[in-house]
Length: 376
Image (cartoon, rainbow, N blue to C red):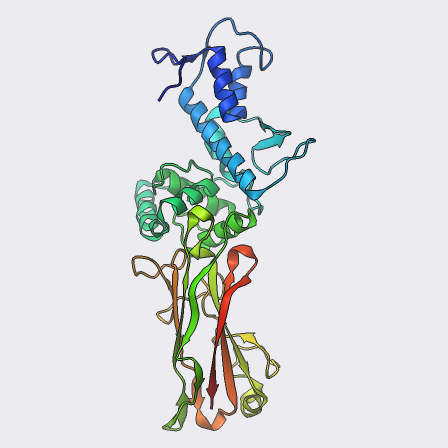
């Protein structure tokens, strides 16, 4: 809807209308438009000035979004002024914009006010083909949509595009490409776990996102397990799970939650094992009765959405609201473990500990813990 004072036929604003738009938006891009009218911001304008209202409105919305994020983060702006990392800067209570063309505002604001400097802040994303664009939309529609409209709006905001519409569209895919370029990731426009991980760390660093446990983490069975000897072998089997709260309107994201399983073996077990450790995946010399993160021989570990230790399997995965494996945006974790081996080399006990960490906030432990003991 055009504001009062706009001439819909000529697309022109008079000076009073521009000033009103400027005050209501607190927008330096509008100030730049006004400066074109005269030698100073408040100079007299004899004739109405030609203004691209759509571009001005887009710039206004993006800068206002940036200001809202600064407010949410509680970043104080001193009387002397403070500067953000993006193309806009705060001086006193006024927003000023560095020298950029109005048409470049949406692209330039991609990097606005990031709390964690990306590896390649000035990288430009590549142009996708039509087929690649459709593949990106299809992937993100399947993987990202479970976060809901509020989650999509917040992701769009951090990616540097308008929060609305809360949709997976070409703007969203292109913004993901630019994000991937800045993070030195494959530029396919698909917001999978590798691309989502630094995005949620950014959300945490801005102080606008955290994880929260809704249920669990829980072992089943819990307590103590004493595996029988069958054919000269022993094996214990247990499952574990956790459910995470997802309320992006209040800054709570399931994607902030990772699961960790730790193991501790006692001295009797260490004495019976070759090298004192269950297998070569553990560091040599790991002392008995020491909690250490559980892993396989290839150093893959439970409950990691992404990263060098992540290797999703049916026994180690995150599930979304559609019941599909979704490492980036799943709100349910399901895992299982079956430790065991020849009864002749198993002795003493192994204890397992299950916990949840908030990867958006420095891997801080959140929620409770659960334990299971295996007596060999």
